Length: 141
Image (cartoon, rainbow, N blue to C red):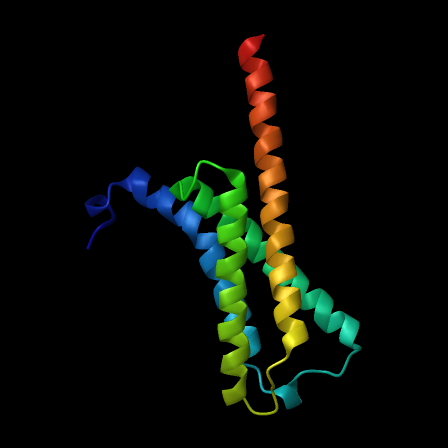
């Protein structure tokens, strides 16, 4: 199937909007598939920072995609849906780790995943609202 079948502009926009959250989700999944004995030992706080950070990035890009998809006209709904979807994905990843040697389900990881997703989606919401305010100001002048 050629790119022209989708319409080049629509296809590029789809990849631009949905590509980043798909890539981040894939990288998270690949990271969770690494057997525990191959992961260097480090303090628990670093594990929390890693989980929070990767899901903050996922939350940001997913909020952007859902906002473009017009899940809702209210940013609160977009943030809520993003957090729920990312937390669900975090749960799936934690459950998957039961099948990975020397990896375990960790509730603290799940909490950090949800908190990171919430933070990332709130950052997107803040930047989106600020961007609209600046755009409105330039339209009125």
